[in-house]
Length: 242
Image 1 (tube, rainbow, N blue to C red):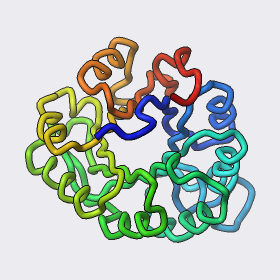
Image 2: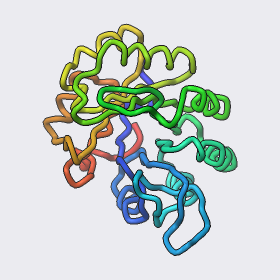
Image 3: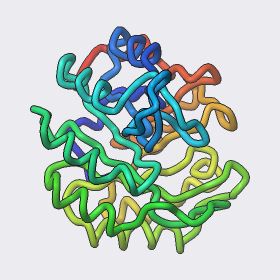
């Protein structure tokens, strides 16, 4: 499946005010960020914030993160880290003038290589689909860097979930696990299933050579790769929406 926007340029973990400012100035087109329940720095009130576990505080609220997208016109990839934030996140998004085809909603919904039990489920993603029929749902598996290659069971879980949810769907593959056996692409391509390739720079930083290889292997994929400092690879090529 060739989803519109496959040429978008992603910036991973836009979870703080300083990173958000760098993202806006960069020319990248999709801010990927993690949403969880916690506190803003200096404020005792709990709310939806931008942070990656195990962090529980941030200097950036989800509301301000969305307002940046509305103001500057970039797309968003919302990575849900706890089911508690699903209702308030969907409500806030619905209250904003935001084009749903520039919205990606992501969650890990099954166990992948080396992974633990997921905190969210396909049912949570059904709620997202009902709220935003045109949004891209991004299905992930819980993984670990040492987990090894994706197996047939993992692919089947992703394909079954995609079929259940319907509409535009992409499935996330972790870079080092994907490269352990790139033949995982074949059954996904045969099922006309769109793919996102992402990495954790702490365990598998990407380079320009990595990016070129992934583009060759999966030319229509969303590519969400960053280097060892957390900056997207080939950032100088990011000039705007394709």
